[in-house]
Length: 204
Image 1 (cartoon, rainbow, N blue to C red):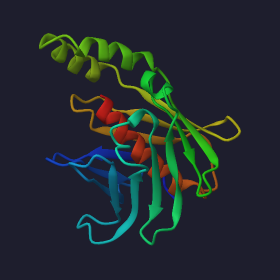
Image 2 (image 1 turned 45 degrees about the vertical axis):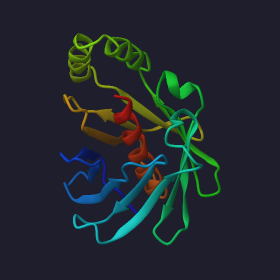
Image 3 (image 1 turned 30 degrees about the horizontal axis):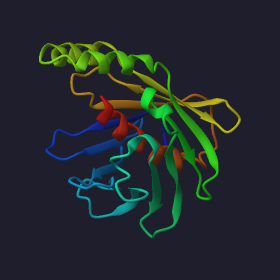
Image 4 (image 1 turned 30 degrees about the vertical axis):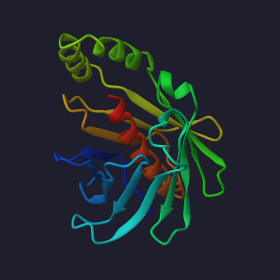
């Protein structure tokens, strides 16, 4: 899989969680469908709009793992069952802001994902607890202040950056490549960042 950056990850207007991923030319890269009404997060990835060809699956490891988001590991595999890797939340640190390890197929650390401004989530959460008025203020805050996430490689070098685009519905993200790469990690990075935006959209 060789991706053409920047990528756009956009949530569709739907009763269910659906996400479209397109590349720099606007071509469809993936269509993502999240299973609803489940105690364990399950996500299916398709190559086409009709969802006839499934390419990957992602599932939180362990019973009730979806509810315990702050320490869950989400396994990523191809449709034939072969492993791609996993997104591992960094324990209690994830409660403060997005903080994840992106693991390879042997569960080795390949990348780290961090929220560049974790204090924004804390401020927004504090505003949101105010009844009625807090919800309205939080919507305006969410529109005006949009977080970014930096993906660093195993050597500590910034490799990708994810931007949430300005929207009342928090429904579009873009991914840029910060330095030229061989493309061998594109599959893992794409699927790991799909998991990232699904989790961070839930957090607000």
